[in-house]
Image 1 (cartoon, rainbow, N blue to C red):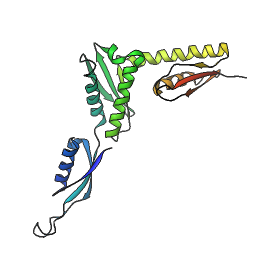
Image 2: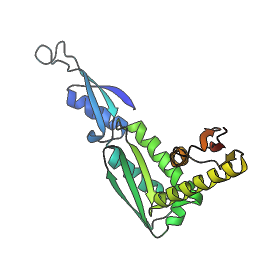
Image 3: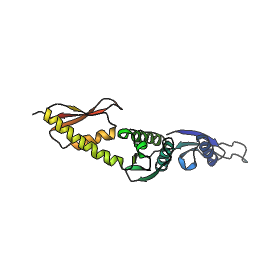
Image 4: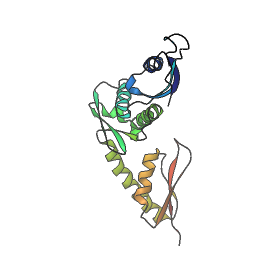
Length: 207
């Protein structure tokens, strides 16, 4: 997280100086008092300024929603974002008229936005929860599609006795394939390549 050290006649003034320099609000920062300062004799002689370290630590739920809405303005204004949370994840649900533009081919646009939201939020918040960005329940439908694809390709690998290589996928989609086939003793799965061209191989087990 970004942090700076600032001085002031009081702790409050030092914090305000830091907040103004960072361009954030008081609610978006975490403060560490390095020196409370002193007024000195008669408030003049030997006076020492307060010193604080201020780190940007935004509320991740609010930041994720605002950041995503800002990105969406470059795509379409015909959508809305609803943000919710639980102990593990922060969910940003996009609904509206132009969901095809938001989702993109095979979810490419949606995945890109989710990646950017997580990177930006991760840099400005100590909250370690992952942000999930969805549009019109696309991810649920995509999960079902990938599970079916994985099982179908596993059958092909078994019937041909040859390894089957799937198309490149983002990490969370590769995980769906691995999970769908983890209890199929006829095949093993593993990922190869480097993101964003990393893909899943389905390999038939040999006796």
